[in-house]
Image (cartoon, rainbow, N blue to C red; front, side, top):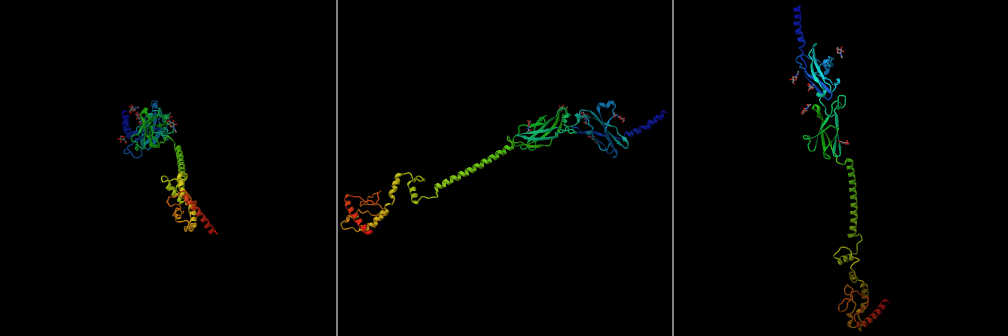
Length: 391
Ligand SMILES: *[C@@H]1O[C@H](CO)[C@@H](O)[C@H](O)[C@H]1NC(C)=O
Ligand SMILES: *[C@@H]1O[C@H](CO)[C@@H](O)[C@H](O)[C@H]1NC(C)=O
Ligand SMILES: *[C@@H]1O[C@H](CO)[C@@H](O)[C@H](O)[C@H]1NC(C)=O
Ligand SMILES: *[C@@H]1O[C@H](CO)[C@@H](O)[C@H](O)[C@H]1NC(C)=O
Ligand SMILES: *[C@@H]1O[C@H](CO)[C@@H](O)[C@H](O)[C@H]1NC(C)=O
């Protein structure tokens, strides 16, 4: 009986060894992001065929000693990964995960892995970053990382910080030497920026309690504005344009008026008579301006140059010829005192040649007292001759 029991034991040992032959999954790893958890493991395909499948279960760690049932997540999956996201693991809970391989009705041993999301799960970057220029500064609005149910990760972690890297795209196009700003606020105003400059921003989430840092967001760039917004600048532009236009209009009008005055002054449409112009130029060589109202003495001088006497002289010339043949009584003296048309000047002259200026030749010429007698004689003769001519 003892021998038989021993034989059965010996017979059964190889069977259990065969059953235990299937190797365990190796290198259990959790790929995590916020509240998304994916368990992966390695499996050497050369040990079995393609028929291997895996089962994944989990249990809260504190239930382990209470002999509770395991919660099954993935059953007989052929993939080497299992998504635990939908299992609603509590973020602050501590869990034990386990994986078993199965092939040809043979199961491997379970492989356990402790998992605490709060401690092990990685943190994601901000879900969204928005930038808005406020004058020459930039407001950066940071949206929290989100859970798998689209809630803020701040529901799970005690606090959340953001590290903001920013740099001027003009000074540092590659962002090699960015400025660093840490903030726990979701609305951050970047300080000390220049107006009308492009700035780029990358933001990282941080959870210092477990030294968790996320990846950085993709660089986002935005241009700062000046102290005055676009609308005002446009208004100023319009106003200055209008002022310029008015100035040009006014100045061209003024120039046109000035040009006309100049033209009328120097090139008048009504020209002065040529002899007056000549006089104007001669009388006042110092100035170009007409001087009709000045230089009274010169105006008097002008008077004696006028040839008012010429007609009278002509009359005398017409009348005189009979006198040129003087009566015998006159004698030779008559030649010297005659009022003769000496050249074109029409100036009366005596024998001495002293011209008597400023007197019309029509008046009787009084040279000497002794001439008077001759003159009356001559005048009487002239009247007599004139009467003869008229008749
Ligand atoms: C598990 O990881 C180690 C180190 O990374 C590696 O050498 C080994 O091949 C992995 N196991 C499998 C089954 O891939
Ligand atoms: C545990 O599993 C057994 C058998 O699979 C089942 O009868 C029992 O109800 C389960 N217990 C709980 C608490 O799920
Ligand atoms: C979680 O962290 C604990 C302690 O550091 C470690 O033992 C465990 O392997 C980690 N789990 C995962 C899935 O990385
Ligand atoms: C910009 O951020 C500051 C705080 O940093 C806030 O007071 C201000 O209202 C914000 N402006 C806009 C336009 O969002
Ligand atoms: C976090 O990292 C710092 C240095 O990087 C270290 O001194 C500290 O102990 C770490 N804390 C934890 C909880 O890992």
